[in-house]
Length: 340
Ligand code: TRP
Image (cartoon, rainbow, N blue to C red; front, top):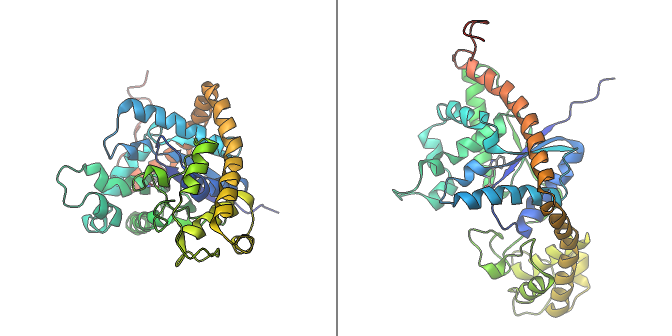
């Protein structure tokens, strides 16, 4: 009996320096789960990081740092490929083919660009075409499933539409990807503004729990987390966003159900104390692993090299097919001419 083909998963993360709990519980934990049952590829999208002003030295160190965090959070290079986007030039090549498939109208409708760049003449062209590069990341691997947060769903929808249009114009070339809604993990909200997602670009430093935070920092931030003043503990993200966020964090850290957890508390103090302690315990092994990896950076580079080799092999095949489908000549048209 032939075994059913595993579905292929691809996701990406920008190389930001300070990795936070939203990255871990909202994204990486579902990636860790995916690597056991699917063929998974995870990409550190350094080219996407160039769409906004960034110091070259910082970009370099953030890229390595992100690789360490992915490993420390549980990605296993025996089970998945971890690689750096710019090291697989097929992504940028395919972006051009897809830019000649996507329309201005489509990109104009992207809400992330509207929020960040619309109407600003000094905004980079790359920020506008960002979603096409993201589509290339996905389509180059013929990914079936793409784990993404709510904020990236519109970009994934664009990737689907580009794939469908390309296939109908030039013949079946790309797999049309589906979003993967994580079964594990949480929507981690800002501790100070619990109605918005914990995110480096929008949160205040007090609202974000970094994976590198000390137990004292965690304790301080959790104790100062915004709640409300009716002093009752129950899970209701709409009416009690702050308390619900704490319950969700505690639930994620302990593996317990949020509604059951809520019944154990009658005031906010103990809920905050237990949440801070559980998060400290959750981060302890991650921080220990980061330290080990920092002492062994050549291992991290080896992992990225293995990832690059695997990713290049897959992307090359798809990009060759796409390139010939649109009518470009193969790189080598006649064997033996000009060869040494
Ligand atoms: N744009 C995504 C983000 O900011 C990151 C990303 C780039 C991505 N390429 C991707 C996510 C491909 C999924 C698949 O979160």
